[in-house]
Length: 116
Length: 110
Image (tube, rainbow over all chains, first blue to last red; front, side):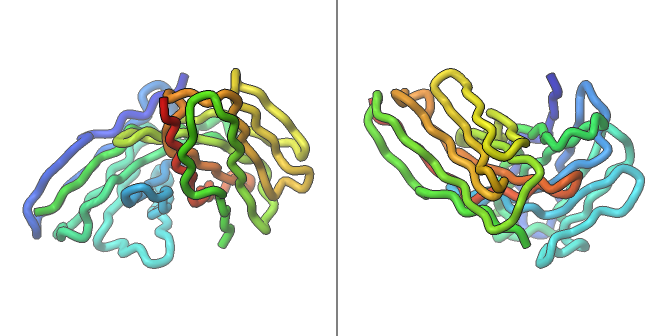
């Protein structure tokens, strides 16, 4: 079945630094990838939609200069949290939709970001 | 903005009991998925329903899509500790983004 790999699974960084999280589709091509943020015991909040070869579409209230998304190939999307602050600490999850057209998402295992 | 409300928010039951989780919206969805998520992991797809009135069974789990494709339910029979997790419904409209429900945290006590 479809597999999405997310890396790193955990990252701790100092305030003011930038952190990059990768999302890879391992056995399929993903024309669209989604980035979510999840707070403890809460549902997933969509941050942005990443389309291969074009600019990401950000949800209302999400700072595009803060959360940089790049989808340079059909198998890789990256989320960079720039100038991270403690309030950016969260669980970030990506998902990918394949080229079959079915509206089914495959999720990565998530990345736990802790900003000190 | 499409909203999906799940109820109950939290559920703690004894092993062997039955339970139902509801997912409701005022919007119509072309498809609806149910996911289960364990702490520190990404959501794992349980089922996709696409036809109004559709019922799907996955072992002890029964999923139903409302006739109007605005709501869905998940029924678990004889719950087991391994069913513990966060259950999320998610509605899709065509190839647009998928909207997640508010989530139901289930705890099954041995």
